[in-house]
Image (cartoon, rainbow, N blue to C red):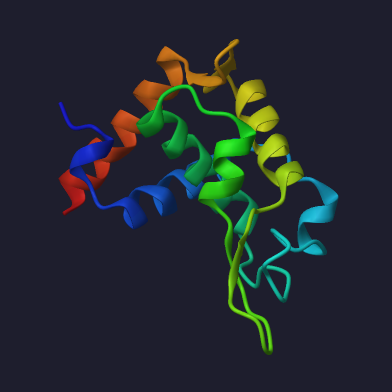
Length: 138
């Protein structure tokens, strides 16, 4: 059986994002107007940024086990440019990741534990089935 580790990450994230959009996961109203972190200059230019970020968060929970908002803020952060001083790493915004966690919990793909968010069996099978479809298409 095919799993997440055997397929291309970009193809998997895009396919899962399309499925999440079709399933009707609620998109917060502020997503179109807010930057994704302090290190960014502009708001995201993708039309489906919310669903892409949700699918990426779902994959990170699958791959990295119990994971929390703080670790994902570091993961999605970037280096901010300065005029004179050196570049420094800035963490991503936490509210976007928290809202993604809440939407995925409501859909039943992840669950909250004391150690962080973990995959549910339905979330694991959802990602495995999607990766299987990608392997058949390739």
